Length: 259
Image 1 (cartoon, rainbow, N blue to C red):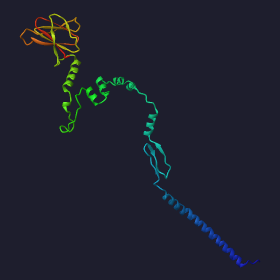
Image 2 (cartoon, rainbow, N blue to C red; image 1 turned 180 degrees about the vertical axis):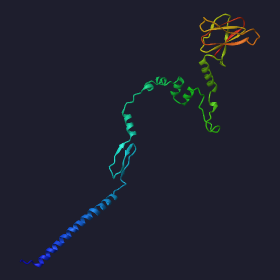
Image 3 (spheres, helix red, strand yellow; image 1 turned 180 degrees about the horizontal axis):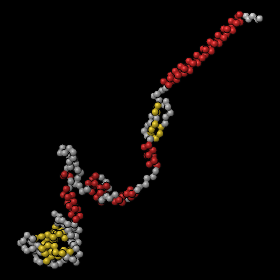
Image 4 (cartoon, helix red, strand yellow; image 1 turned 135 degrees about the vertical axis):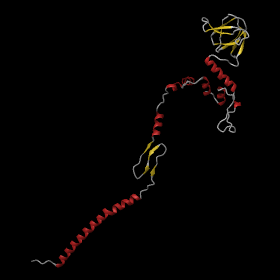
């Protein structure tokens, strides 16, 4: 039987023990790296990321944010709409189609002649003239803290007169304080017509008066009665274009509108 050297047996035993120690140590180190160091290093790197590095969405842009993630910037919807309008040709429609002719455009919008004059006035003075104002209306805070117009700057009588003329003319009848008597008198049985654009008043004393719209069919309008009675003096309105004639005795005059 062969006898092995005791020292060789001892060396082999030591090699086996050393291999076991190396294997166990390597596994332990690998477990340490995988289980602790890598997550630790990952946390270190993430905590050191510069969170202040951001991209902001300026005027007309949307998006942005910190750069720890992918970020995008885009034009806002308002900017896109503006670009779309600027890139397209505007086509006037309806009343705007006549803007090439200012008068036609204002007429399409229903503006009156006075309104058009105000709109086309070169300055405030021309606008006041178009509105028939004597001067600029001013605010007097000492009298009324809310609003007060200085009446002396206006032309109230002319403005009121114009309004009265307009309203009376609209209905075709009425009496105007500035009406004047016609110089001539009217003869018995003679037919006369109102040639003006306003109503006139025929003054009849001790007369009978008939009127007609066509100078064919006549209707009795008034009988002033007997001299000295309450009905001896009367004014009869004659509308524009209508006819009238009087009978019996007594003076007759026309009361006409002022020139």
